[in-house]
Every structure is written in C-alpha cells, then in structure tokens.
View 1 (cartoon, rainbow, N blue to C red):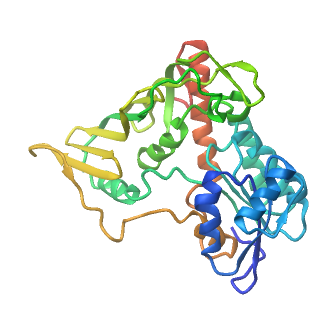
View 2 (view 1 turned 60 degrees about the vertical axis):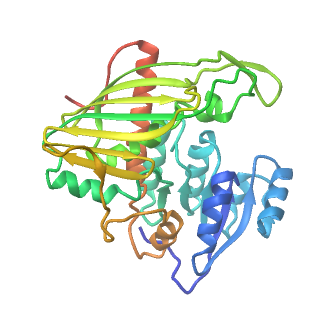
Length: 350
C-alpha cells in the first residue's frame, strides 16, 4: 500500500493516454490534491502528445509510453489508453518502480489481468489501482447494509438492464469499443455493470450468453472495411454464488430507450437502482419508493484522492483493486467463451 512519498513531497505523475476520462476526471482530480505535479504525457503519436501537453498545461511530452515509464523523475503512471495497452504499460510501470492507476476495462482478457495482478503482488511497495465502475458509488454502502439487515429476505433473482438510447448506424466508422484489436473481449459496459453488482452480492458461478453485431462491417480509422466482432446486443444468464439467478441485457441499438438499472428481487423485498436513485419496498407495501441514503453511507467519485492517499500510506485501495478487476475480466471472458461455444461456462465450483 505504501510508497516513497510523504505529504510534504511532490508526487510526480506521468499520463499515458490523455483521452476524455483522463481529461475530464483524472487530471482535474489529481490537480485538486495537494503536492501533486503532472509532469509528462504520452499519447498515441509524438504529435498528439505535443498537442495534449499544450492543451492540458503539462510541461513535457514524452516521445512514447515506454520513454515516459522509464523516466526516473516520474513516481506514478496514470494509464488512460484503450484496453490493448493496459497490460504492457502496467507491467512496465511496476517493473520500473512506479505506482499505477489504470483505466477501467482492466485488460484485453483474463490472462492479461492475471499477469497484471501477479506483477502488482510482486511489488507490494507500489500502489496498483483500477478506475472503478462509477454508476453505483453513491448507493453501494446503503445497499450493502440493507442486504446485511435482511431487507430482501432471500435473494432470488437479479436483472441488469442497460441501453444507450442509440439506433444502429451502419455508416458510422469503427469505434475502439467495437474493435477487438483495441478492446479485447470487453463488450460495451457489461464488465463495468458486473463490477457494480459484485460489490453488492458477489460473483457469478457460471454464465450462458448470446450476442450479435447488428452491423457486420465498418470502416476503420485507416479506411479499411473490417468485420465487427464485438456484439452491440448481448444477453447473459448467470448463476450467482449467493444462490440467485441473474440476467444481463446490454444494448447499443435500442433507439430512444436509455436505461441503466439493477433490480434485486427477494423473498421479502425488492430493490431497484435506476438513474442514480435507489428504490425499495417490502412485502405488504403498496409499491417501490425512493430510499434515503444516510449521510454516513453516501459515496461518490474520489478515485484520484484515494490513489494519492494510498501512495502516501494514508489508506488502502478499495475502488478498485486488481483482484476485483481480475474477477470481472474472468466473467467477461466466460461470456465471450459462452457466445463462441453456445454453452454454459463455469466460473467457479458449483
């Protein structure tokens, strides 16, 4: 957990991949912490690195990510790239003695995630953290308490429904999320919602999945016509270790229908999370009602603060540990295997 920086010393951070989340969240969040300097940035090309440095007020543009990771003047690396670079940059950064904050969608597959976790465990003096799934941060502790108190009775069924509100657009170019060379086995936001669910009820034991790419081919950034191998419509059935059955529906083709919700159905009560609000009711109530989240349970985004405090030995990483990332990548890989083989895939002994 601990590093070599105290609160009185400047923590020097390098950025690999200055994408939207890095610009909107990580850089402002890091700059809000006392004694933190963002000293260098590396993007996909030297030219884009120079542009990012100028736009973001960062002193140096590294020629590539390898040069940034090798820089002895950098203490920690924030990885904001697409998943294809998460594993190699993490391994190199930890080997170079840097702390690591890696963007969500931990890796391309479970094997890469396992290598990242092994590298992190080999350097217990370095902090290794993943950017957490953000959707349920505000209610996680409240839901966990309600489950402990028996609000639901026995948990029977779980439904996760996600849709981005878009119609399928065959003319749109190939996005990195649709390109398996960049995204690996990750499908839309499936793994991110599964991470949220794991915080509440734990892991899946087995999965059955069916998905499809509604647009079979798209043109990539180089003008090449490419097959789209990442589904934009997906259904998953899962048996959970807690005894419940879960269903996941994730869609990028549900025009004008935008939703992101989790429904927990128990023998004595129901909980529903939707649009950032937690609803609940118990047997005998007239219907679901908004539930108040206690002040001491309210959560929120504090990723950069947690990263810096962990480096300084002031707290342990909770959102999100590499161990948790491996679990959601194992789930993601099992879903991909189930789609390919048209059968149920076991994740742990039944």
